[in-house]
Each structure stands twice: as structure tokens, then as C-alpha cells.
Amino acid sequence: MTTAILIGATGRMGTAIVRESVRAGAAGKTLDVVAAVASPGSKSAGLDVGEVAGVKALGVRVADELPPDLAKAQVAIDFSRPELSLRALNVCRAARVPIVIGTTGHGAEFEARIAAASRDIAVLVAPNTSIGVAVAQELVRIAARALPAEFDIEITEAHHKHKLDAPSGTALALADSAARARGLDPNEDTLSGRAGQGARREGEIGIASIRAGDIVGTHTVLFAGFGERVTVGHEATDRSIFANGAIRAAAWLATQKPGRYTMANVLGLKTTG
Image 1: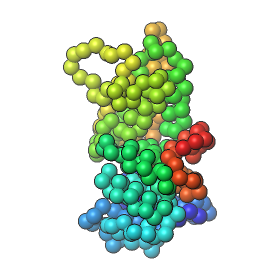
Image 2 (image 1 turned 90 degrees about the horizontal axis):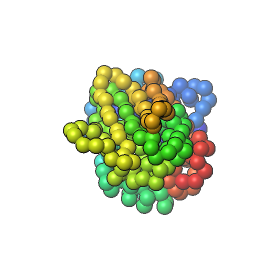
Image 3 (image 1 turned 135 degrees about the horizontal axis):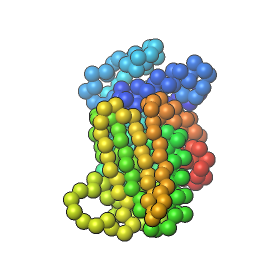
Image 4 (image 1 turned 45 degrees about the horizontal axis):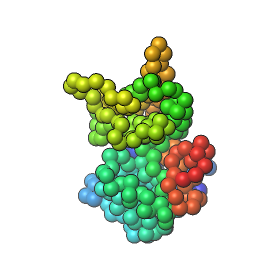
């Protein structure tokens, strides 16, 4: 059983991870949440994290500050907010605890901070912890490399109306896979929210975002050529798939040497960090 500190424990993903860890634990599997952290000033501070998630009491109280020793957990799982996520990365690096980062919406400094931390600890960055999405990313990479440049790439993504960041981290990761496979710049050659007048640039990768209702997450990558189209898509219908993927990733990461990893590493689709 892998022991974990859960950061962002009272959010959508945090509570889902708690529920799935209890369910998996009953079957004799994988993850034991030994510490839980919410945002400073959280109304859930002091409550039992199991009861907050709607399951049995676990004897773990929600804290609103990161413990310096991370409760001596073997791994950290972060689904919080960007500012708390970066603080968690610093604390994990100092405590030499591997971390799974599922938080999205990071600023420009994120990549540099990850690169620095991954010299000392194992860091897995996963804007989407679904196993299916990891496979979809690999399919996008293959398609982008194999299809001629005349095939335009457009990505659409849809999420629930409460999601704060757009485009989604998953859409950006899919665009990154496609761009790198074609030798393009993921930042310069990706366009989010096309509007107004103007011709489509050669090599441009477009992303369109939808926010509505209770959509869990839908992503579609379209490769459109003349006379034919190839589509790679993924639809999530239950948030538990992300929680189970995060649990699987955390158990795997806890035994890895320092470096940067993705869900592709967890699934054996990629062998290096």
C-alpha cells in the first residue's frame, strides 16, 4: 500500500480520489491517504477527509497548510490551484517526496520550476490522468507524424460550466503532442478561440472550448485533409476514471528515480522521463 498526501483534497478531484482509494483499499489495493490539505481558509479544515468525500471516516483531518515533512508520505498527489501547486512542488522537493501534479492553468514559470524540481525528485505532470487520454495522446502523435502536412489539425474540448481554465490542460497537451510530432512550436503554432476575419495559417493547430452543464470532459482531435478526415477522440462520462488513473500514477511514481514523467510512462508507452 502506497501512502500519499492529497493536496486539493476537498475539490472535485480530491474527493473523487478519496472515494476511489477507499473502494480500492477494500479490495486490497494501492493507495492510503495519510494526510489531506485544502486551500488556506477552507471551510473543511479540521473535518475528516473521508466524511468530506462522503465515505467512512478515515481518521485524517483536513489541514489548510502543507506539513513540512508531508506527513512522511511516500508520494504527493496535487489537484489544487496553481499557486498552491507550486508551493507543494517546493515542499515536496525539499522533503524528497515524488509528486503527481494534475492541477492545470499554470503560468509561464511552471515549466522552469518543474525542470528544476525533477532534478531532485520524480515529478509526473498529468493535466488528465485518464488512461484513455494517455493512449489518445499517443495516437495523436502517430497521426500527426504519419499524415502529410496538408492535413489541418483542429481540437475541440468540452467541460462542465464550473471549469475555470480554457483551453483545458488536456487540449493543450494534445496540441503539444501534435505540434512536436510535426516539428512545430506548441506555443507559437497553437491558436485558441479563433474569431474575426483572417485566413488559417499554414501549420496552425486550432483549439475551440465549450463550457456547459455537467460535461465531465470530451476531447476531439480532427485531422482534415482533402477528401478524407481522421479523428481521435476521448469522452469521459465518470470522474472516477481520473481518480483511478491518479491513484495508479501515484503508486507507480513512488518507486521512480528523479525525473519528469507523464501518464505515458505509467502505461509503458514511453520509457524515459
